[in-house]
Image (cartoon, rainbow, N blue to C red; front, side):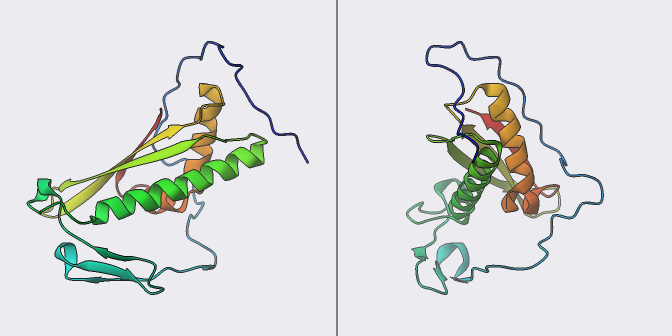
Length: 171
């Protein structure tokens, strides 16, 4: 087993933050579709944004209300909050997996997702996601490499790639 490496000594000057690029980081012709389904979650919405949502195992039972910005009371949960929670948790897991594969301890790392909604050009609505990733124990160049690799394997990243804008930033 490879030893876990920790980078950047306390008090060391952090290097310049490299830009994290969005794009199609996959090899041409490489599919991101699952070859088999190993788990499936189910949830049912009742009443849309002014209703509630439940999961088939009853672990989720939440009131939904539109946010104040969309004319709602803002007193319940929004679908965008649920998407942000799912994406940030999934991306963080991908980050930890990549770090482990590379031999790094990502203790203290976090992923914050911001999911925005707004009108699009087809009289509908679209989403945009901004992920803010903190990996405090690693230098910025190495952290950027791990983030890019995580973006390649995260199922949410694979599902959204080419469909909505997803920005990645090191915090």
